[in-house]
Amino acid sequence: MHDIKICHLYPELLNMYGDRGNIMALKKRAQWRNINVQVLTISLGDYFSPLDYDLVFMGGGQDYEQEIIQNDILDIKGDNIIKAIEDNKVFLCICGGYQLLGKYYKTWDEKQIEFLGALDLWTIGSEKRMIGNMIMECDFLPGENSGKQVVGFENHSGCTYLGPSVKPLGKVIKGYGNNGEDGYEGAIYKNVYCSYSHGSLLPKNPALTDHLLSLALKQKYGDFEGLDPLDDSIEYKAHDSVIKRVLRE
Image (cartoon, rainbow, N blue to C red; front, side, top):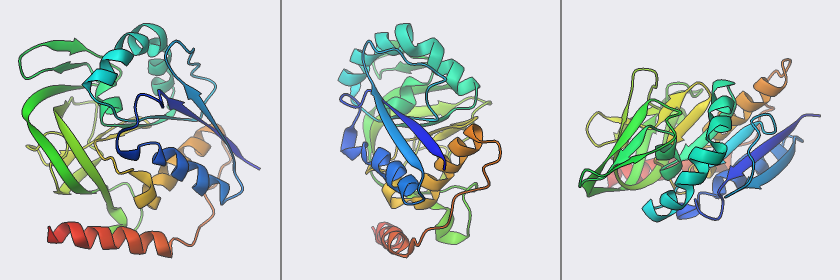
């Protein structure tokens, strides 16, 4: 029997629009396959060991929460988070957690806030708010048409730009995405997956959830052959109905 350890970083501070639902989706889809799941919470002042976890989740927060976390993530956990990323640990980071992994956030009035620099990306604040339902197409997901489409909800004023070592998570079909300019959303670097999609993201997107679980288990078990299939007919009825509704907006 396989087991997986999930680290939830700063759960009491980074939980915009029900982001902790991503943990619930990962946990249940693993348990339905008889995979043992342990979720551990790590917050301010806690030690983060890059060897202790198979998958790390960090949700979104407003500027206030990011300022609270900034010193902790830079000075206490930063080196080990970077080590975990470079060692191909699986990460899912949403909105504020996504921004914190980048180099910096420059506010619309030119104040620059230094972030972790684990990923070659940066964020520029805007006076315009990018808010609404989002659909993106992710080529790395299996299937065709709607199977590759990921739905979510975005609400951010930061415009994120990717450096050459980072590729986008998906191509925007509906919504703003990273910056409302280049037509792309989110970021992928090694096994780090980032998105502006709240809502929460994973319960509405079972293929993406399984992709993250598979990556984590393949990293842990060299002989892991893949996840057993589940009956996702209900999940995809909900997923496809959201896509149809959003495209009509």
